[in-house]
Length: 161
Image (tube, rainbow, N blue to C red; front, side, top):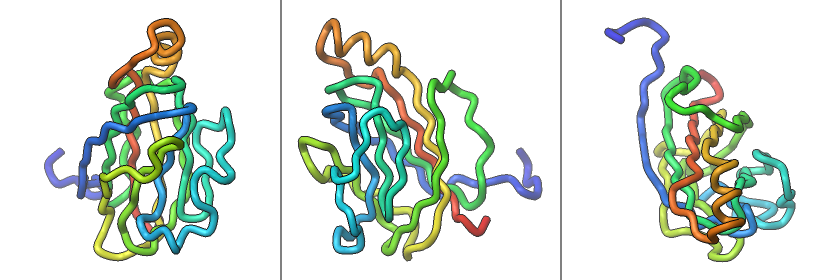
C-alpha cells in the first residue's frame, strides 16, 4: 500500500445505527430546502437503491430493526470491498449542495447524525453494499427484534475522480 499512484484514500469514516421501519430509509442532502421531493415521497417498495434528486432511498431486508451503517468518503473511486459477502450492491450518482447529508427513516423522520462529505457541495458517486439481508428478514419475521444484523457500507467519492 506504500504510496502507489491511483490508490484511493479514505477521507472520512463514520458508523451509524439506523432505525429501519417499513424496510426503508434514505440519505438526503442536509439542507431540506434543496431536496425537491422529500423522503418518503417516491419511495419504492422492493428497490434496493433508488436515486432521486439530492437523495437516495434504500430498501432493507428486514421490516423493523436497527441496521449498522458505515459511511466512507474517498478522494477517488475506491476498490470493491471484499471484507463481507455482500448480498446486494448498487451504485448511483448523488449531488449535495452543502457537503452534508442526513439520514431519514419512515417513522422517525430525520436522524440526529449528520454526515459531512466535504466543506462544500458537489457531485459524487455512491456505492452501497449490504450484507445480512436474508438473516434480518428471518429474524424480524420470527423473533421481531434485530440489532446490527443487516450491515451497510455506503461509499462516496467525487464524480470527477
